[in-house]
Amino acid sequence: MFSKACEYGIRASIFIALNSLEHRRVGPKEIAKEINSPEAFTAKILQALVRNNVVNSVKGAHGGFEIDKKDIKTIMIADIVKAIDGDNVYKGCGLGLHECNENKPCPMHEKFKLVRAELKYMLESTDLESLALDLKLGDTFLKV
Amino acid sequence: MFSKACEYGIRASIFIALNSLEHRRVGPKEIAKEINSPEAFTAKILQALVRNNVVNSVKGAHGGFEIDKKDIKTIMIADIVKAIDGDNVYKGCGLGLHECNENKPCPMHEKFKLVRAELKYMLESTDLESLALDLKLGDTFLKV
DNA sequence: CATAAAGAGGACAATTTTATCCGAATTAAA
DNA sequence: TTTAATTCGGATAAAATTGTCCTCTTTATG
Ligand code: FES
Ligand code: FES
Figure 1 (cartoon, rainbow over the protein chains, first blue to last red):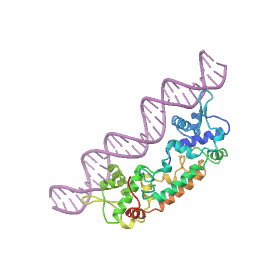
Figure 2: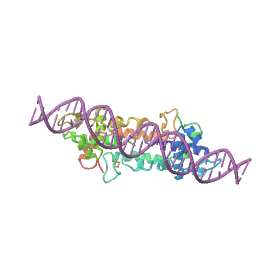
Figure 3: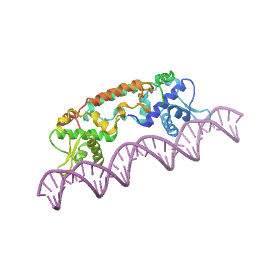
Figure 4: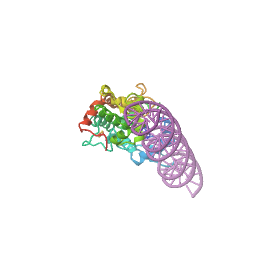
């Protein structure tokens, strides 16, 4: 469904959100450990998230990654997916035609677009805050 | 969503089904041309579909690929996806945890499982015949 | 200012996926 | 029985994704 990079990116963002709610910055080492991902690769993905304004980074001593507290409830999982995997999962043809075109639909188009819309709505209506709070309560997990 | 191999596999199966309804066998060359896919790679995928009993092959002169007419309406897209991509798209965790476990859910689990169930139902209830008939009518397309 | 603790970014390596090629096996038909 | 038309399967190559490493830059702090 999503690339590994995207999976790590979502998990990392939730972990950063959780910590930002408690005013803690976190670095790639701690993030990778907590989400069970390769550290250097995760750092690369974090760079992409910074470039796409999903997370902020603070360089230098006592630096790390954080998300503005006021943004945590408005950043949607869709924003993260779009930043890393692009919008093919929302817009692309399920059977891999060059584009999904209502006027020249593939055989799965009518059925596929319903599922895709459902996925899109789910990702666009799920914010980081609610996921971070569930995690904080211990109801959900980021690894294993 | 699906791998390239799976996309080609589904498109190829629909094309074979369409031709089998008209008692024509088709070879990899014609298939690749009609679904706009790389020929040798498509042939490899067809082998996998044969091994998984989605399509039949007839070797030798006047051979080719076909699907038993009586099977066309009972073969579901889910069967093709499972044969090529496996069942991760149905069963796997959306955030890439080792397994999707109701008792140790990832943060997206509750929302993700609904979309995944929808996708599963769609794939399991869509048969080759209906797709092949739409294609025959010219309502849908397999390339570009 | 000097130093140490961070992220940024480029080069590189490993793995997986996608794609190609070619010889062997199979079979209908001449 | 020979031939030509086929699929099958293994080896290989190319491209994309995943993952690692090392140096540069930035910045808080002594
Ligand atoms: S054309 Fe294939 S999903 Fe729309
Ligand atoms: S645990 Fe992640 S989808 Fe179920």
